[in-house]
Image (cartoon, rainbow, N blue to C red; front, side, top):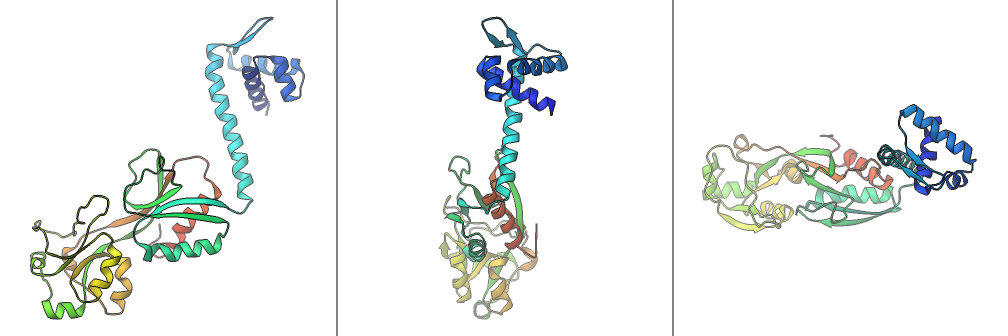
Amino acid sequence: MDSLNGILAFVQVAETRSFSDAARQLGVSSSAVGKSVARMEQRLAVRLFHRSTRSVTLTAEGSLFLERCRRILAEIAAAELELADSRAAPRGKLRISLPLVSGLLMPVLTDFMHQYPDIELDVDFSDRMVDIVEEGFDAVVRTGEPADSRLVSRRLGGFQLVLVASPDYLSRRGVPEKPVDLLNHACLQHKFPSTGRFESWPLLGEALPELPATMICNTTEALLPVVQAGLGIACLPDFMVKAALQRGELQKVLEEFVEHQGAFRVIWPSSKYLAPKLRVFIDFLGERLFPVSGQ
């Protein structure tokens, strides 16, 4: 405790350039401030101030020590604020960017809004690579690890891409037995809106020439009713087609030739202080988005 009091006294003297002014702000005597700083100098074995009858200035060592002390006091203030906030209900606006898979995310978001009615969600649905810090997002959900050192992330759960078609389509066009057979099928393709590039199908073996496309769409969700209608073969994430597979509306094809592992992550700017509204959002996604596959 004496060290903390010494830091407070030192910072006040450094900022006011006066022992008497520092004493007034701290509510103690000038001699008490002088003794506290002197004890610190003795403990550190350095002189922190140049003292004269007219002025008090920092030494080189004092200037270096001041920066450290300010960070220490800022950390203490942040810790006190965090503890105070933890006792209050999370509230305020939360600006988030989510991928174009609303069927996966919207049920979780609506549950979150019911549980935390004082948090206002400002949601941007997009697959583009946003600049989280520069664009002012509190958090984004994307696949893959962030490359920016200013960001941290938490894994929400894994998924796989699968090739699917309806039983009706396969009865009419035949079941492909190897990847090259896709060249004779109607392929429903996803194009990334941010780059205009087709999403490649994760097929093992030799690379195929461009697959024939009977529909090109900039969101995978729009392809689901098309493939269910028997209009082709699509490459979709397993969570999107799970229910249709269970109902027998779709079936997988070329399973032994498809190899893919993906993961969703929630990403946010790195900070030692995590606002309560952001902390509960991250925890809620982690618990609810992929409750079976987990972290």
